[in-house]
Each structure stands twice: as C-alpha cells, then as structure tokens.
Amino acid sequence: MNRLLVTGGAGFIGVNFVNYWLACHTMDRVVVLDALTYAGNRKSLADVQDNPLFRFVHGDIRNQALVEKLLREEEIDTIVHFAAESHVDRSIQGPDPFIESNIIGTYTLLKAAERVWLDNGPIPHRFHHISTDEVFGSLGPDDPAFTESTPYAPNSPYSASKAASDHLVRAYHHTYGLNITISNCSNNYGPYQFPEKLIPLLLLNILEARPLPIYGDGMNIRDWLYVEDHCRGIELILKQGEPGEVYNIGGNNERTNIEIARLLCMHVDRLFAEDQALRKRYPRAAPARGERSERLIAYVEDRPGHDWRYAINTAKISKRLGFAPAESFETGLAKTVQWYLGHEHWWRSIRRGEHIESEC
Image (tube, helix red, strand yellow):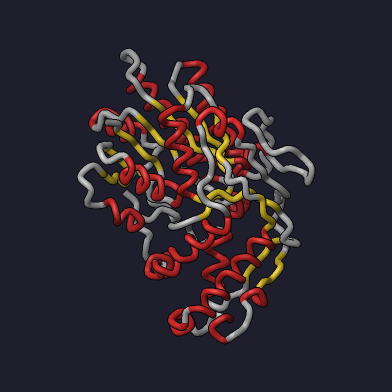
C-alpha cells in the first residue's frame, strides 16, 4: 500500500491522475492538496469524493507547516507534484503567480519533504515532479525531437518558472539525497481541461457559435498527449523509474494548431449530422444549421515569443519502462469531445465562474 500526496489534484491533469490511480490501485491512500485557484475545481473530484481512501485538503503548497503536517499524519511516502500555474498567455500578462507557485511552491515542498523524510534518518519515499517540454525552448522544422539531455532554453515566464523548479528538484536529489524523478510531458488534452486551453476552447466556441481564435498563421506545431496516457506514464515512472532520472512522456502526435482546429471542426460537424439531439441542444452551432464549423476559424495576432514547434522523443521511457500511448490523436479527440458533450454542466459552471471557492 502506498500513500500519495497529489499537489494540484483538483486541476486538469491532477484530477485525471487521481481518478486513474484510485481506480487502478484500490488499496492506496490518496490525499489531494490544492489551493483551488481559478483552474482548480473541487467538483471535478466528485467521482472519488466518497472513497474512504481519498482525502481533499484545501491549502497552498507554499505553506510548509501544512505540508509537513500532512506528510506526517498521513504517513505519505510519495509526492506527485502537479501544482503549477500553466497557461503561457497568463504568464506573459502577469508572471508573478508563476514565480510564486512554480518556483517558491516547489521549493517549499522540497524543504518539507527533506525535513520529514530525511532529517531523522531516511524514510522510503519518492518525490515525482511533473514538468513540461516547454523548458527546452523551440524547435525548427528539421530539428530532432527533445530528449532528456536537450539543453534548457525556456522562452516564456511560464517555461522559465518550470525550468527553475526542475533544477531545484534535481539539486535536492544530488545535494541532499532526496529520492526524485522528473517527467517532461507534451501538450495534454482530455476530460476536465480548463476551457482556456486550445482544444476545449475551440470545441465550446463551436457549440456556442463563437469565433475560433488561432494565433498567427496557425502553423505552430505541438505534440499532443491524451491525458490518461500521461497518467499511465507517470504510473510506470513511480513503479519502475530510477531515482534521479528524467523521463519524457509524449504522444507521438505532432500537429499544427490549424490542423487541430480543422480536425475538431470536421469531427463535430460529423457528430451533428448523425445526431439530431445535438442540433436541438446547440441550435446556435453552425452544424446545427447545416453550416461548416470551420467557417468560425479566425486568425488573431500572434502572442509574444510564441515557440514554433515542440516535439518529444519518447525512446527512453519506451525502452526502459515499456511506455507507449494507447490513444491515437483521432481516438483521443473523439473521447474528449464525447466527454465535454456529456458534461455540459461542468464546463458551463466554469464559464460562469461557479467553481471558484473562497481562500482558506
């Protein structure tokens, strides 16, 4: 039996990980620590709320006393650290929360882990830190994909803050002997993703007949990873990964932003053509009126410092741990669209701001 502390467990990837872990590891204890900032939603954890092995704590990872208390009273042996500010546009508009959460928050967690797990003699433990491919910078069209040894070259306040947190985690391993692993993932998509991110933003705008904003010429390229595949990759690292090692988790799905938009439009149009109930539920949507969703695509001014291409080389985690994505982009996209169509109450409450709770 393992006892996990999942930071940021009410956010997009954290929620999916908690649901996945409790379903697959039915004897493990999972404690979620989340500050419930704008992207955190406690309602997303409704499926596990009554599980006796689950506990939710509303709190900040910068509160070292609280983290130490939880580690001790819950006898935590594994920290899975998702908590982070993650939206690049927001980091450009206001970097301060990214520095506070991603750097200071990670540093505080590391201090608490060292004190509880190492200061009075080492206790078996693992500190797993979730990072991003954005720390490696931008690739050209013919550049090889990022590997775990690619030099860091972050280009936004968000990626710079994540790079700093990666370095702190690595330093606590080499300096203090903390048992750590790090994973750098590509763009995630799937259920429970906050509507400001590309795929849910485009989907919900299609349903509400709003423009589909695409930066620049839409030719920026990302590797897309279905969120449950990401959870399985983390599981492999926790179970089989070597302490001190870094693993890239990717979906092997490089796509341009405009390609994503067009594929999503075609998929939604097909669903509306096949299902009269959708046309009744969303009468304003273009396909409900027999029009193509693609006509809503609107090119907008590119954001500052927009990285052109990210690509993940997954050879290390594939060869050493046996990881391979279970979902193609097409199957993952279909599952994602069906989830949002089946959870209208969830995304509408977010768009109305009803998910936001008061501070502790």
